Picture (tube, rainbow, N blue to C red):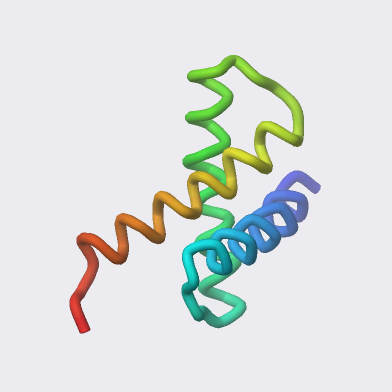
Length: 79
């Protein structure tokens, strides 16, 4: 059941992060960005700030997804 929540939270976080960073991505990429962002941002935020709960995880997921987008734009393949 937690995997389903991770996908749902990841999809929402990925959607918000891609809109904030003005990135056009397909649904699968948006979900992947959000899920990876949820893992990275959620864990880092919970560890550094010792904050628990779904709100901290959601905010961390958005921040993590935005970090991944920035890293991809900065260090990823150039078009």
